[in-house]
Length: 106
Image (cartoon, rainbow, N blue to C red; front, side):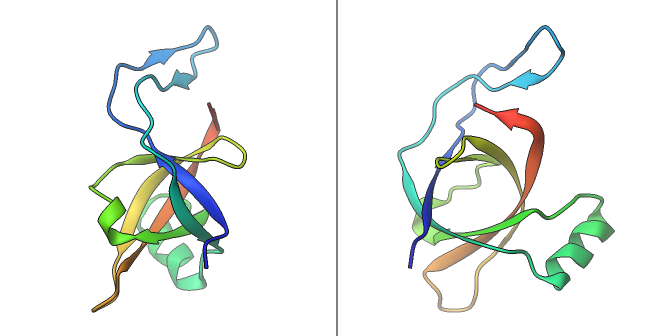
């Protein structure tokens, strides 16, 4: 069921490097199993209407999500902004629609 894992970025002081790119500072959560899936056409349309690009859908257990805004893909260190969440009725899982940060890696 799970094909990857993520870590949530917890709030902390952030800095900018010499080139002006945002460098997250702070703690990472424990590793959370996740299922990475492609975004649907509906996700792309909703994202476009809201002014962002939907790059990845990530499904996790709902009990692991507490409203965090950023996460890290453990396989390659990519940072994603959580833009939309969706939980089906009577489901234990939550789908996070995410936008990849440009030049955002840890």
